[in-house]
Length: 80
Image (tube, rainbow, N blue to C red; front, top):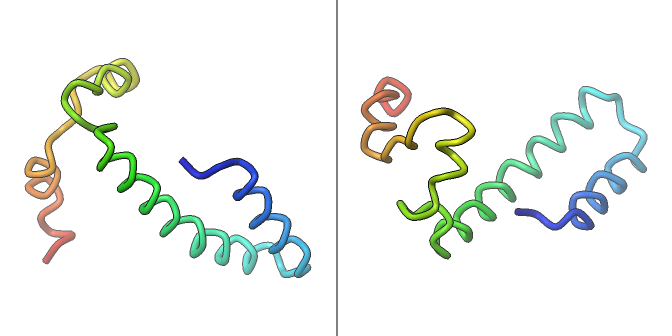
């Protein structure tokens, strides 16, 4: 996860630019999306998404998480 102070620093810096809200939202999305991916990758490398750590997901969505293979099969058209 991104540290709260990092999120606050980025958000404050963009707010200080006094942009139109839709432009600011686009910039925030462009900044936070890759940071989220990096943070998720680091968590995954540390075992956060291992089969032993799926209880939270099961509690939230009511089923075991799908595998990467199942995800790709389900959304095959998005990868074409």
